[in-house]
Length: 191
Image (cartoon, rainbow, N blue to C red; front, top):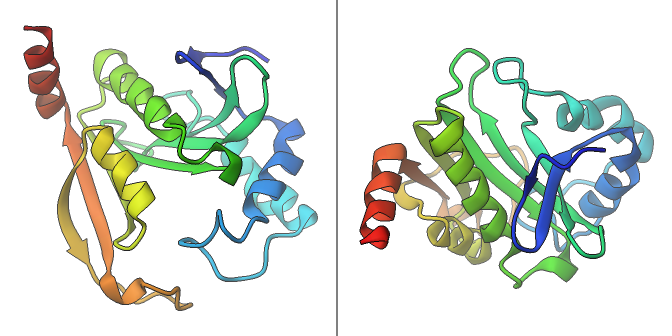
């Protein structure tokens, strides 16, 4: 399995069929899923038939993964995934940033490290013009990753979801970082 992107501590790679049990374990942790889903964890069969292909399939407009498996560089241990996916098949200039890491990996800056690497790659090499992300307003950890990655809060929305998740009454926050904002901030740092 080739490793297309690395950071100081992490390796990001494409998913394959062998990642099924890793994804199952991640989605089976209620704390990991706290702000995402209150339904029962997916079964292995359901994830194999309905979820795994979403992780394996390269984006039709870019040929790159939409979802990257994140592994520690030294140990090779799978710690989760990061999404850097164009929001439309026909327009690859706007991408959505998302992440899901195992609880043991929380608080180490891994999500931010991956996000910064993909944002840089997207703006410098892949023609990305805007990175968007969203989370429940009460998901302070996720919001902190967005902010440390350079995204800024643009709005709070109050949508109705089929299943209530505690804190939903405070809405969902939407963040964004444009290429021009990123370039301006990074040129200032170079001075």
